[in-house]
Length: 301
Image 1 (cartoon, one colour):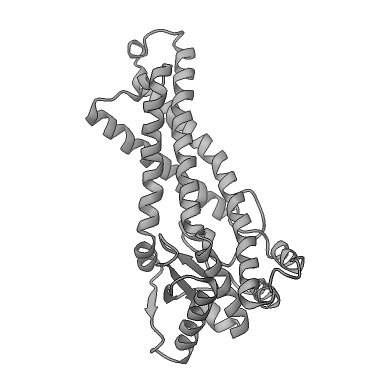
Image 2: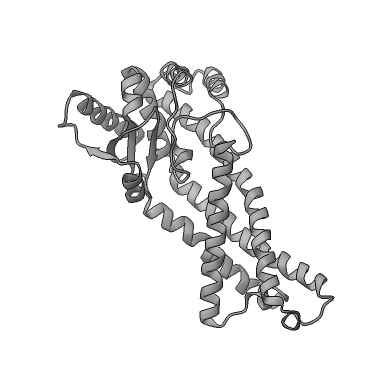
């Protein structure tokens, strides 16, 4: 429940900030968005406005993802010269990157409970990081499967895909929020001039409420997609390692460990997950294990 509340709070804050920035820019440019949403001729400019502000936040987050995560997670980038464990980690990721057909990503270790993640704007300049907890509590075969899962996220371009999906969703949330605000305010004012009713404040308040409601509904769709990508990454690990058994063992091990918590911006690209729900980034471990056990025989060939 705490994670759901935190997820909602982060999204509410993001929507509020996006609306504030949009309103400020439009005010400086002398553009009245409420007038654009009131007639058919204004629909295309409104959609363009929504697209710019809808994609901006996602793209900025994507391109700054590595720097932000390194700082927030206290990641220590390694090259393999630090010790035997670090050398094994770098060599293993290099082998998996070669198998996956992508360039060697940056490799990092961060302090925390059992988890791992991948991030980065492009699959040929990604970052793969593992926690100290997962290195200490998993066998090398299990950890190699986890790394295969993360490299599958990288080779599948999941970071970019999720960013674009979020941007498209943001676009339509902003667009339809303004349409809804115009319709609702028109109904409340009986079709009278909105300015005469002190309508600017009411209009933007309705936009805020509509964006929160639409944002919540759209997040359910995005999180469903995130869960589908987890199944694909698990299957990708099985292909890279030639068998689903190591990934199944790793997931079973995760079920007995305290999972590490990741920032919302990269939670979808971690390895650990809890129970399946509408607001979960990952399917349950039981469902993921079942999916791996039901893989076609030639999947991991």
